[in-house]
Image (cartoon, rainbow, N blue to C red; front, side, top):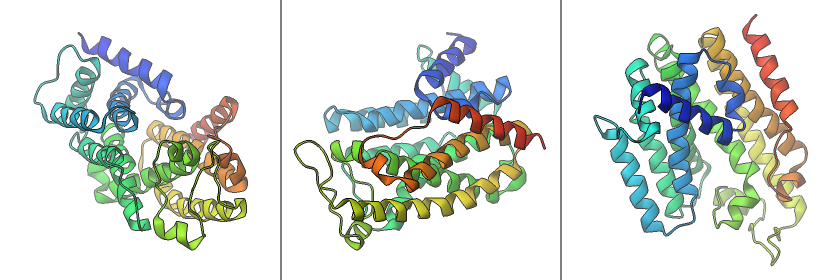
Length: 287
């Protein structure tokens, strides 16, 4: 399989699976777009293992296999995602070991980890999303020129996006037996996140509303920090980052303004809203 064919496969995965990230990735020049698509495609593979429903031991074995694939000197020539990822890493300074942090986070998902404190949750977010921010920096550039500052900001933006995901998927995750919100916060607001026979939360809605808004405010502080990364990037990388982060930031605003939408099911933005946010990102980056 040629690298060109492998990249095309990864770009198809982005179009089909990355409904939010696709708006930003398409703003990059072709070499960076292909490389970031390869990063996303492998991350999607790992996430799918963590979110799967098969036996835990089988999923843990699959995560161990993914770890071995990242450590391998050469990719499986028949695996388009690995072929593209290794080619991208040869062209850009992508820190492939950061994928192991993502694998660590997904391992926690499979083993049913829960989070007692907010710091515990933030550590998980750094694993599963901050790692993607640091991987993306290798494609965008500036990691070496900006030193640790760019990595810290990319990490913060990843935490912001993951906290948004957790709030968006609150009901869906609970149905799957996963609870990400810290135990100390649940007790603070008097919530148990119990479900009735129809899969609806049994906590008083006003308590859940206060809890969700509290967590949304916390996420906003991570956006305020992480969005400072944009000023360190080149124009098109900045537009890509601003589009992706802007879509999630807008989603967080929807969640905070009407938590009942989250409690009733998974919330999403209309395609025209995402396109508008991406257009504004391009305009802002051009100034």
